[in-house]
Length: 150
Length: 248
Ligand SMILES: [Zn+2]
Image (cartoon, rainbow over all chains, first blue to last red; front, side, top):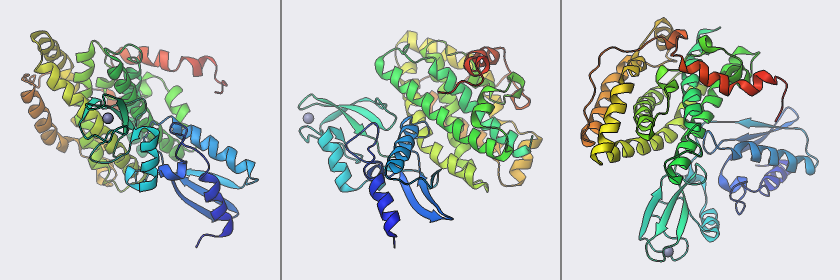
């Protein structure tokens, strides 16, 4: 059971957007692993998406700012590595949000987010950020990004 | 320095120095896609190095990850010499990367079974990333090797030149043996067989010849490097050394 205060922290975290994909929150991204209250302190366990993801530092700062804005000062952010972050933690709703935003969600079969065609070509294994690859739809010819399954 | 610290530095330094090398490609890649790919791989390696150096700092108790990256001299770095070798042309970079990726994938797989929980967690996380790196580098080995006569000749030369730096991957010294005994470390020597299979298989598919295992460079486990490392450090460490109190 989550206490009222812990529930409140989850809600605040739910309002912190992913710095690179602002339509989803850090909670939806799956990087917040746990919130606990230990010895007068809230411990927020965060796991990085990719080891070198530059957004990790940004969203930690964003989390701190949001919590302080809500008068919560007694917290600590703990970085955890195990279990390693996986796109399996994203819910269906989150994947829908990505698709609406124009990013093909992390699924084994990639569909064009514009026209739903499955006829696509890989442009590059690496996109603008480590978590995405670049593709092209051969039906509507639109290029798009795909959130890689890891 | 504790044994465990030195053992972690050896792993971290290879990622850190190769990351720096790859970052030199940024804005100079042969195509936009490759520019982005090499920069992303560089970032992954930097992230891996950072996790390891932070852990090392924690064990040490007095140093931060930044202290370890920016305030050590050449002889205190333990990266494999292959990581400090020059980028050369794109084929040189790909040959170096492919040999490194195929080794580190096997190494981290074993390290993920370490009794040290943090090392095992960092290894598990890194494996996912290295799988991607290896896919990228081996695809390029195939394309360049089985490409035009020029690309084939060039990358064959790249492999011939870099080959003497692969012997270090499989060395085991007293410290490695001790870490292995404690079930913390990896038996690098045992990885050779599987590495040979991956490398031989890819080179064969790429219609390239595997260079002979002749003279092999050695020394990085004791901080002995080629002259290239000093040049890397002078660039990488310049700002923190010139302005020690500078904050971002
Ligand atoms: Zn389409």
